[in-house]
Length: 193
Image (tube, rainbow, N blue to C red):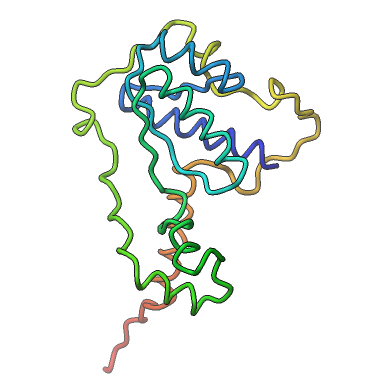
């Protein structure tokens, strides 16, 4: 079930942030109602988020940008769902998405290469940065349960593919180990005596 996978991803993110003396804040409500209050309450000066190329996402993000600008909050939007800027690819192709992989390759060959990955967040990188966490953080900002979101969990099977970066990294490591063992099988020791 997609909702279980998503919640597991959020729980894993929160667990990893805890290791860095921080937490995930899951904000409930409509952005138009919630953001203006949080901008003031938390004294937010900068808002960053990932660019969403989907029509719904563009509309939502434009509304959030407007709210932020009205509150004097700097907005930084980064492309990170994809390696390349999809809108730029469409622009280079005369306003239409490329229909073949060969055309896609031609277009991206005319673009700057993707940015290198950023350094993995670590305690050293975080320095003395500590997120203030209230006693009621779980109630106010914790990852909701399936039941809280209105899902019936009776008879729900366990996840075939558990969510979260930690699980994903474990799975990819196992896969790569299998690939290595297949390409380099151990040779039985032979004796020529």
